[in-house]
Image 1 (cartoon, rainbow, N blue to C red):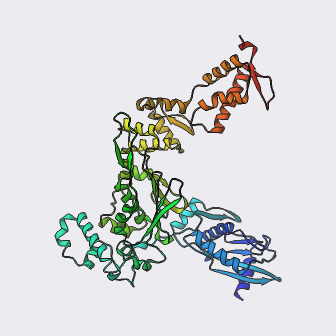
Image 2 (cartoon, rainbow, N blue to C red):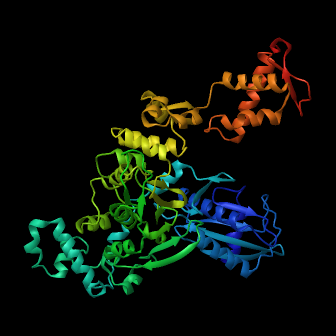
Image 3 (cartoon, helix red, strand yellow):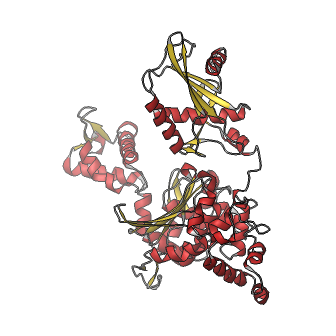
Length: 553
């Protein structure tokens, strides 16, 4: 039998390899561990030019057959779990059952990752170093991605679809948008048939319906043509406790969906806390351009081969997020914002071109930069990007979170956008690279030691943040030492709790609880061991500090 021959072939290897794994697995096997092995063996099969990787259950590492009692229902559960949590979505090619030496062995056959598409498990990529399971290296991940110029899904022809599967209302709206993009051709455009217009706008190819045409202009019932991809956008409203209050799902045609979703979003007015003449009276929480740009970016750059949907979450606490499936192709958001040129490559090249022609997006690289400037001009936090889980999520905050930071932007209008991006990271207490630290310090914009930076004194003085600056920076150690000495002069003795209550609350606010406790410990050590200002008349566990004889008056 083929299964028996395959088992003997796999057992003939001297030891486990990058594409063969042996497991004991008596009556069950951890699903999460199985998923990690699936990702690793699939990726390694690709890298080793093998059609499959194999996981054998019921076999020891030394190839001793011990058998397994895992049943068919469990196997089906494993298949479903793998299918639901891998990306691109995948599962076992086969699960073979073989009896050897009176023991039952299961062979899980895992297909190699497709060219250009490494396999992840719950958003993480796994690989193997010999017998060891671990993260897939960036180098190997790039090797898989570079194996082929990934096929442009958005340009695929749908042979069974016709112009009758597109919405006439959407086509007419697209024609008006095309006129706005090409005002000199208005008269001529009116003479074109729908078929000619769609070809001219590069939504169809020689009259053939593309995946892009279905996404942008298709009737809702035409979504099945792009299966297993989906044309689906979900809007969800949550309260301040993150409890869902309302939702609605939207399908194609996507060219009309922005207006529909915009009508759902509760774009309330934000009223500023007045401070002189620094701030306006009120503004919209979310600029309409930002909603449009964020949503259209999701549509343009979604990885439709993953079968995911676009999700918009509106929270009543004053923020909104847009999430699409797929990695972020540019090197970084900062590079996109500070660059004056468009991206050199796109995931959905044909779709992006069609959206440009229909006046939905542009390719001059200014869309995200404009989002940042709009937030900056309203003194709101900058857009926040998250690339975890093989998704791109951008969160827009529609309110002032840090009034001092807002004052700083208002008082220093000439700050460059890249400087504001870095100061936004400081305000959010995000980690700075060595180059970013060097840049900010060279301009005297921050003070402190890594990782506890705060706004520099000269900036604080300009912006009225003097009190905040003192809270962040704290006082010099001599100040705290003098407070302890004054306390002991008045009360003669102090416990650890007494000293903590005396100075913990006025230590620099950028320090966390543990860092503050360590600082107090260092101050006490310096005063007792180095300077001999105080001495302990209690125990190490329960100290009772008094002034040294030399300090008593």
